[in-house]
Amino acid sequence: MIACVFPGQGAQYVGMGVDLASRHAVARRVFDDASAAIGLDMLTLCREGPEERLRDTAYTQPAILTCSWAAAAVLAEAGVVVGCTAGLSLGEYTALVLSGALAFPDAVAVVRQRGQFMHEAARGRDTAMAAVVGLPAARVVEICAAVPGFVEAANFNAPGQVVIAGDVEPVREASTRLRTAGARRVIPLAVSAPFHTSLMRPAADRLAAVLAAVEVREARLPVVANVSAAVVRTPEEIRRALVEQVASPVRWEESVRTLWDLGADVFIEVGPGTTLAGLIKKTVPEARVVSAENQATLEQALSIARVQGPSSRRDTLVP
Image 1 (tube, one colour):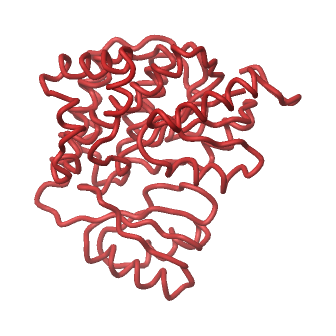
Image 2 (cartoon, helix red, strand yellow):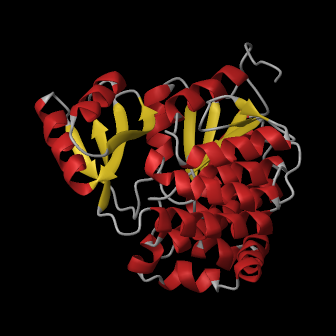
């Protein structure tokens, strides 16, 4: 079974998505639909940036969603059959579009506001996020809890990789203590707010009102939610998961294991970057993992999808 997974904020770069938009009419239509939905020339933004603008979460989120959905649309046009899906943080919206639960123009409009809400929730605070590599998750949580000030675990990405977030000085202090405790690396991340921490609660509350006014349909295929690492299907489950996700840690490692348990043995990371591919390989080394963000990688993904077929595992579960 093929699982499509979609990246979140931090995967952005100037030039993303442009190759596919220039080669495939279906991808170009996705960019056009995004531009119409939010009144922003999305192709120009992705092609020209500048990088500083693409790092602004109000622009980053719709841009990554658009590039990811453009790549997914090309895969779909080529006949790739997907059995289940998930996305990291922002990427969960692309997964929901793939499942039929959200219309793409609605998703773009929602994530534009989501990005604004998250940026505004951190306004006036000097914040940071950092990836911690080489320590058990429980140890990272313990060390953060002992640091004065605000710092929390925000993403549980893979075995031995946890992202922390909070105010700059507590994040720095936690980073020092984590290195002393044996972390192999602590890597600052190029993001503009402490996502998936309790500091984002005001953003979650504002997002709830937006989602209440958006049509959400029952998902046509299993979508694994970040906040629970469980499948969500109904509109009520989906809205609740999207709201809770903003101010709660992302349980990505568990989400990948859930996809594997559903029967996924081929994972296609659809959209900019290859971060998820690396995390998946660390979590389920037996899986075949490929990225699809431009013509070359998309062709590789198609070759694997065609060779693999709908499913080759005998332990495939029917969700």
